[in-house]
Length: 306
Length: 292
Image (cartoon, rainbow over all chains, first blue to last red; front, side, top):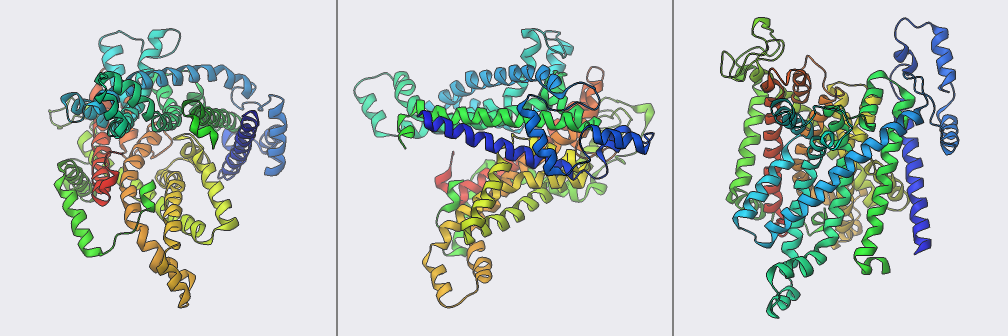
């Protein structure tokens, strides 16, 4: 098991390194000189050249890549062009906010998505089923940023229950978390529904009912346990969706996280900062997915035997 | 995704009839189809359908409420929101259709080569696809647009590349199941060239399930285009795009909530239409996949 963990860990590190190279390669094709674009039209040729040397853009891609990785190992991600501060400071200041938002979104997804799916999957065709399917269908079709604005309009501007933006308290977190979770709740409840419906058709469920166990007990103990694997897969997929959605949600609610930092970096053409935010975003996604993969083994021992 | 490696349909004409009958029996799929057709009509005939010029500013009537002179009101420059939505449908559908086509065409090429040739080519191409898939949702498209610059064409390209790896993997799975069949061996035996086998025996046999997924991808592409444009990284003003309309309307959320909220309903309707139609096509083509 330990050996397996080590192997998976290094595989993830290699994916991250390859991804970093791909990102640097893509950013390398920026039409025009990113430094000249950043400095604007008033910059002289010498100014452009000195900044290019300062951030190492005068060297070929492969050298820059090796240097970047080497510095990264020492915790250095270069300096932001705009803020004139180390990228690592900016990123680590924003990252906890994004984690908090994503974790809150995930908590809501699990708390709402699974019960909603169980309720509708246990009694297919019932009124509860129809209502919950309708809710999830609509949830899948609404753009995240639009839900955010609608919630903000009603609950912040009209009712004044929650602050319009920013961070600092649980009240600040409520609307962004609900906004972010909306798509994932819908998606998870659909998967839970179909998964539980499939399991409830199995012979052992009939046996459990026949020996006199109550319906809710059968659904929760026998049904849910066996429906877990596809549900976990969808949860893993939702991590990526929540992180991408966080970029939009942070923009709507002025939430000072990694996504807002990234969008700002693109607007300002702040190349080192952009690279740093992408790296942290992508790397954390890969590691969370690794954790999800490993959790299969704990939930279903048959998986780890393979 | 697994249904793509099931047996290709036989007795084509008969089968198509059966699929169509199953599709039209489901009211939700028909509803989706109707929404999609209406949107396409509106997009194609936008200049004829739109009641006003979408770019014309009437500053006196800025942020006019709905149901006045303008059915859906006016935006912050006094432009008719309904007309902008109609022209926005054109932008949104063009970007989505072309990006899905890029993803589909690229995916068919990569997936077919990978599955048919196998070996090192397969390993390299599939590792590259895995790498593209390991970016969280939205991030890859953002990286692409950050590099290429915002704009309608670059947005289309970015969404297309985002869709490519998923198509490539589905195609590869189908190709692998098809090339082990006897009629492929038979074609080899009578000396048919590789290219000809790929074009006439392999690709036509998996294309219909892939097209169903393309329909479902349309919904994703519309959503992604709106998201990029909302962030200011996609379609640029003054070109009317639904995402950009929401983005510029959010500054007036308190005084004129209709400016930012109405375009969201258009996005929802379009996404719903393609989702319902795609679900319906999938269920009709392969009833075993129902509810998955």
